Length: 557
Image 1 (cartoon, rainbow, N blue to C red):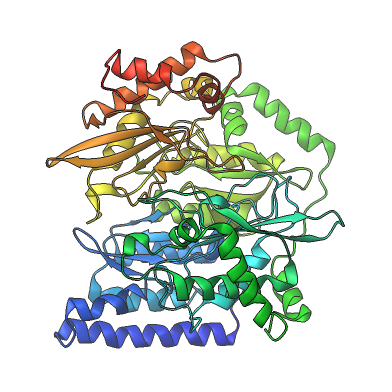
Image 2 (tube, rainbow, N blue to C red):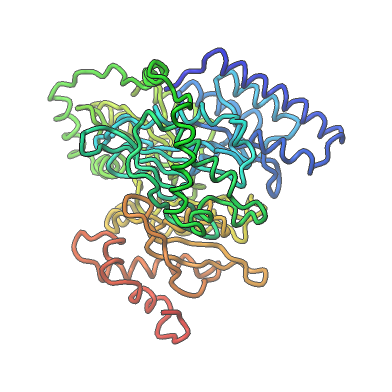
């Protein structure tokens, strides 16, 4: 992973000192809350329903055991003993006291962490495949380019005050696990007919009030032009993106209103004017960054290790169930990618206690190379674990409550904080997620159901990514009461699709039962080994509408 140099460290410490002065002025009354708001947002500090919330950056979701221990210390010292991992691969603290935030940020700076550009109308944390660098289906490691984008975008003077927040995702694998098609810019590494590796560039994706799938603006961009091309896209957006209406200020609206062909012409024209004189990263700098992501020194694994792993799977059905669901194929023989579920029964999706953080840090050192990943699904990953160690690791994760075998199953729910925390929310998300999790808690039942993505948002801003859930749930306000709208058919990956509203909303007391009805209908009509999304594509929405609403003629077709 990338290591800060002296410039990085000095810069982050200076930023902490600047913010300390701004907080002091707010506490003394010299700054009003309105005057303080843009300053705190530039440092990742939000004001929620009950307290401030601090969002800490984890660039492209990669961090070390050393940093995890510091996150645990922060949770104990400045919060209520836990942190919350987000869909942007960051971590949030929900209860810091304003007067303590500068000290919190200083503690983070000691381990090369910060909260810069985790909020505000700027380029946010670039995200990527949580299995980057180790996935068996990878063409090239995208983390190298994520780091290039991080360095280029941090405090970029031209893009510090964009019309709206701006999000970039990069993937280098055949399977898109970074949801690139739902980002302002999505970058997909692939090879052209000559065998050269470059980027397909997509622009204009996003969720929220107006969910749209990004469109390809350039089919192949040579890698050496990455930053100059991003510069061209951002310049066009910064000049032409709407600033009169925040709901229409995203680049997706510009793409929609201008048309992708017309926008592509403007970007190409801007790029042609700057690419020859633009200082793209010289090859030595690219190689310097690439060196930070060189593979670790993997062990040579004897055949008996694989046999031992298979025997352990045969002898322990619970271990077999966990390994079937939570492990992913590694590109290095004898190793596995391990997903740590942060979705236990009666837990809050994405939450992790300080003691669990410390334990995960220890496990990363003991069974890996001290590296941890955070995922878009609000889980964690240990990227390099020997197969011979998996059984021992699973036993320890079970003790810690981090071995729930539900990755990509119905209880691996993405849920925003909802009305329990967020001032923008219309309805609660966390209790709904908890009730559904209890309903489908039996691991054997979950595996029988198979892959099913369920996502919950407490308002139209879609922080719970409900638009891309196979089953999506959106909290809405109906005359002061919480209701929940269901969408079906969302897909975040290669076959990106936006879920469609199936009918009228359900009350808080009805929504979990409605999900149960959908699942029962699916199980009754699916073909053998068919996934939920495949059944839905085959039969359409009508069987589910009939099951939920009967023959009500008022239900939209």
